[in-house]
Length: 94
Image (cartoon, rainbow, N blue to C red; front, side, top):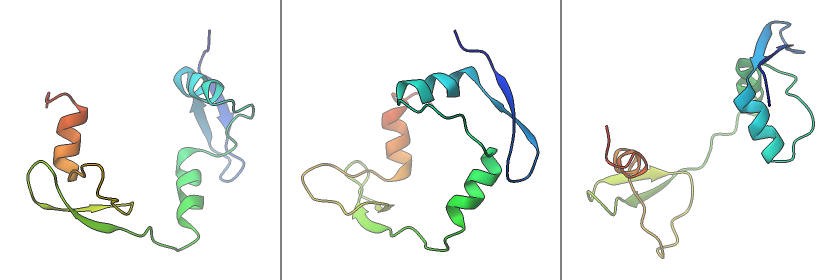
């Protein structure tokens, strides 16, 4: 249904691919406009405001190590360090 499109970044002028998978993702989310910037320029804009993301400390529910997470743990759900989180989301297949 979707095919890769080559778009031109309005920020840097370089061409980039708007993949079929990205187009499907946009459609599922109800986005009607195509991206106007390449990934590098989008990332640069996101980081341009200079405010660092607030991180919180928690103890991993799986291994017991300290974990830094970008949300304030409420205590009602387990929190995992990045290694244990990746193992759980990968179904244990590494």
